Every structure is written in structure tokens, then in C-alpha cells.
Length: 459
Image (cartoon, rainbow, N blue to C red; front, side):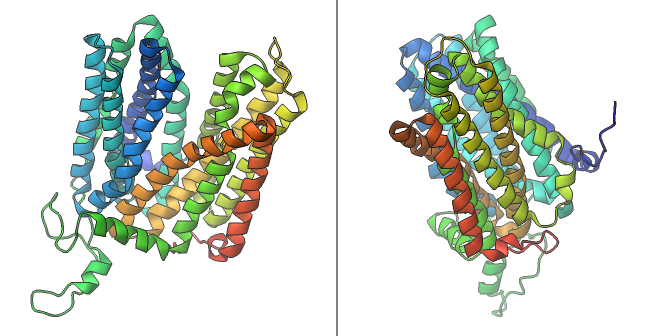
């Protein structure tokens, strides 16, 4: 059997050289698995209580609204306070909310409103915790290792997204809701321990604030880089945690075309060509198999992400990262269009049996889309982390969280509306091709992004 070159496999150097990063990666990987487990279990419990698909759908709104509203403010907190403390406090809130979900199940309260509220608290805490966690990683590793760290993070997330829901459904079926939630509480405790073991990570001085703030002697500040002398966890003088700080982050993004373009092209991919909303109909009208087919198609995207992560070794040495993002999103759009083309070919015939060959083709197309999205994610995150100064990194990570969370949900609305007009197959075809056209239009308008050089990261 031929050996796979080691340079092709995922680069584990960050795990070897940084014990702190290694603990964080394992802790968060385990926690993500538990989170996905709970997402499925909560949905099943809400449906068991209400018998309403709409009630299950409201869970998504309860999670999205706090994430969007607090995502930007959470990033401002990350830029103003010690990042270990912000991550730890938000993780404690997450742990408490998860424990509350487990407790309501053990007490058999069966109150949908309580579940909605606990999910909203989880999402609000995530809006602070996720930017803090992402902004911490570049402080633990040399910038040359950031792409490898992001590839490892994408791999762990893809595995959690694939295995977590299956485990959640299985645990509920075999044990029950309370036991499933308790497993998540125990798993998240590992992440809590990993964050606890982090060293203090106070934010670095804001160069813009340093330039504007006078020294005690009355002269201008030197703005020299380094670790601030204020105590860990205290807000640096001159930084305001509020609307002004959030607006500063948005204004900064408006003047940084390369970072801004990573957001624009991702929105193009997710809003125009996210196909997941059509999966339930595909299982009934096109390929047969109902819920099983829906699950297989959903797993296709995650499987592609896992494969891209496992064979990401060469990606971590890429220099022209903007070009890779453009080609990756192009591959995403074409893969989604190929998925739609498969549906158009077989037609909406409501088959009684699964159309196996068509299902395999559709699965492979979605796996290709998932792999392309994972590659794009690695480099979009890398550009954000390496081309943004530490003082702005939290706020831009907050914007990143809003884009990543909101884009696919807007995509559900857009592609769902298109499907109502032209059918599920043509909606995927049109969305995929339109995504490709928009991305290349954006790049033609922003040639600096195409020329982005990882050896000289410019925002």
C-alpha cells in the first residue's frame, strides 16, 4: 500500500510545540462535541413536548439573536480585558447554562420557555467566549503556525459536527434527555479546565489610542509595542467598552480591504449557495429515503470538512492565501451547482425507493463543497488573525462570529425562497453559479486581495 507523504497530512506542529495550545485544542474539541450533542437533544426534547416543527425552529432564533446582538460587544470586551479572564468567565456562564438544561431534564420540568431561555443564555455567552478563544490563539503561537492551528481547529469542529449529532440522538434513544445533557456538562468541564490553565493574556496597547493619548508629562505617547503594565483583567486606560468601541472596530474594518473582503466573499458563499434548507425536500421529492437521506446529505458537507482537515498539511505552507480563498469558494459554488444539477437530472418524482446512484453523486458533490468551505475557513481566519493588530483582533473576531452565524441562516431564507419559485434543484444550481460570479466580481474590484501575501500580511 503506497504511503501518503507526511507533508500532505494535517500539520500537528502547534500541538507539539505549545502545551498550552494543545490543552486548549483538546478541551475545545471535546466541548464542541458536547455542544453538538446538546443541540440535537434539545431539538428532540422540544419536539417531544410540543409536537411542533415550528417550535423546534424557534430554537434557532433564540440562539441567533443573542449571538448577533452580543457578538460585536463581546469582541470589544476581548480587546479591553485580559483574554483569559473573559474566556473563563464566559465559559463559566456556558457551563452553568448547560448544567441548567441538564437540571430541567432531571426534574422533568418539560417547559419549552425555560429551554428557550437557557439556549439564549448559552448563545449570549458564546458571543463573548468565541471571539476571546479565537483572539487567544495568535498569542500562543508563532504567526507561521496560525494556518496549521486553524486547520486543526477546523478538523476538530468538522468531527464534532459529524459525530456529535449522531451521539446526541443515540444517547437520547438509549438513556434519555437528562443523561445526554449530563454528558455535555462533563465534556464542557474539560474545556473549562483548559481555559483555566491559560496564562494571563492582557490585550496589547491599541496603537491608535497610544497615538492619540498624551503621556503624564503632557507629550504624545510613544506607542511602543509590548505588554501593558496594567494588571491582568483590568481595562487599559483610554479604552471604552461600549458602543464607541464597537464602532471603532467597524470603522477599522471599513479601512482594511483585505480583511473586509474575507467577510464579503464568505457572505456571498453562505447567503447565495447554502443548500441545507432543501435537504428535507430532497429526501422526499427527489432521492427518496426521507429523514435518512436528509441526514446523509447533511453529513456530506461535514465529511468533506474532515477530509480537508486530515490532508491540510500542504495548505499551511501556502503563501498566496487570498487566491486560495477565491478558488476554494469557486469550488464551493460549483460543487453546490453540481448537487443541484443531480436533482434537476433525476427530477421531482417522489420515488418510493432511494435512488442510490443519484444519492452517491449528491453526497460526493456536497463533500466537495464541505472540503472547499473548510479550506476557505482556514485562510479567512488566518488572514483575520495575522493581518489584524492585537488591539483590534477581538472586535474583528466578534464581527467574524456574526458573519459566520448569520450568513448561513440568511442563506436558508434566500435559497428556500428560490426553491419555492424554481424548485430545489434549480435553486442550488442558480445559487452556486451566482456565488461564483459574485466572488470573482468582488475580486476584480479588490485586486489587492488576490495578491495577498502571507509573508507580508496587510489588512
